[in-house]
Image (cartoon, rainbow, N blue to C red):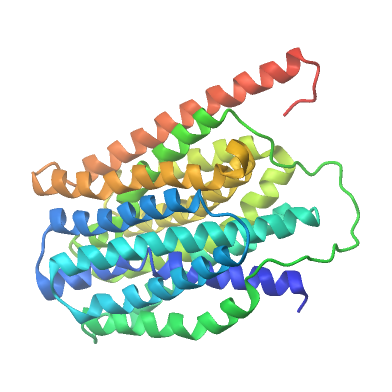
Length: 391
């Protein structure tokens, strides 16, 4: 395997460890934990929000990290903390300790993800291959798929505590390769034919991009936290719940390649607009129908867009704010997703119900899409006035 291939595989495994499992394993684990410990949606939302709060703090901290050995050690420590806090969830039944562990997990996820994205993006841009970063983001879908399969295969037989241990143990197996291969390096450019039709990321007004991505964090987080619990709570749908998350993961794995290819053909901004449209429909669908087919379809639409949106947004905003665009955008995203589960859990406990919260989430995503479209139109008009090429 080439040095580029090893670096991208290390990035994929990193995202599987710290995001697909470290961050999202809570979703299929939630109904199992409620089965074992009996807490309600409000508590579930607070536990989810504590992870997202940590993600916000970690992303803010990442904006101050600069290239060098310190950055590498921050990355490695963050991966270790992510694995340890995943396994640590099985050590206790204390709500307070769960909150702390999920908070630390969120900090570690953000730091590891952002540093990995910085290292890999810098290396790929140096050889004029930024589009290949899709493979790193595919790791989130791989980790989500793994977490869903674990819940499907072992969830009925094992306690939730043992399930947390099992996930942590599987992540440990990936760590040595990640530590060996994910580091600053100079890659060798591949000989390839130039393709004038391939689009590259072009900047959008950063304030609009930040508002849009913050809305994404808030809008997606309710679905991402509660969808398995929502489906399993419906009569006769218990077996469908874990499959919903597996389908979301599989769609997420392939979606990054799909959206990278689409962005190269129709432009990053237009690809973002299309991804948001698909996600808005996917988030709203489970509120409109209790069908298992609809739930599976919604999961595919959600999983097929969530990492694509992140990949495209971070590519567009990467060079903004003196190179700190990825960290600042991730902080805005973290702020939005921190609020989502806590507010949704409170509303459900107060009697509002999950369908209304999903519709509200779709509405927030729609608002973010409107902000994005306005920014794209204004940019294109500005370019047209200056006599530049269409974007």
